[in-house]
Length: 212
Ligand SMILES: C[S@@+](CC[C@H](N)C(=O)[O-])C[C@H]1O[C@@H](n2cnc3c(N)ncnc32)[C@H](O)[C@@H]1O
Image (cartoon, rainbow, N blue to C red; front, top):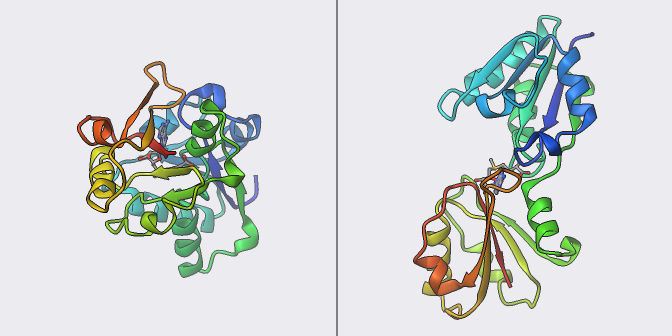
């Protein structure tokens, strides 16, 4: 295959939500860069370059360098690359290294946000969509939280901290909240409760919060 970068959404985690396009593209790429968890979803990968949180940037740069050297490179992103994914980071690295944008193709995936909306029968075009992933400042949520729409949010760190932040800012402790944890995995959990109870509960980092 010609030198190209594919930024591929792999869905929320289970292989059931992988697209055929993602599978075929990875299979025919010279190299694939992704988290260990993402790489494990695919059976046929030519050259795997696994990253963790600490060396993510270095491995993405390596992926771009390999494409500059003439290889086709798939870069895996959980959910959809354009929603709190690696899209902007890869575009920035590629631009810094003068790799042409025309040779970068984005292959969308099913976002965890979409699956959370589907599980809860939410028409999400009418929801407040917020992501606080990797952000310290969560003030923005206060601007929309009382606008009568449902809010679907990727929390910044812990779900309980996000809930406590809302309580501290005067949101009613009886407000209905649904936490969708580890969507699509065998141990998926959907917990419906009040803001107060959620602020006193423990969840893993892999959660979507829905605030009604
Ligand atoms: C780096 S962001 C990636 C989001 C991804 N691009 C998407 O479209 O779903 C990681 C955050 O997404 C959410 N997330 C990703 N996969 C999830 C899943 N299977 N279940 C629940 N939340 C998930 C969690 O909030 C997690 O901390």
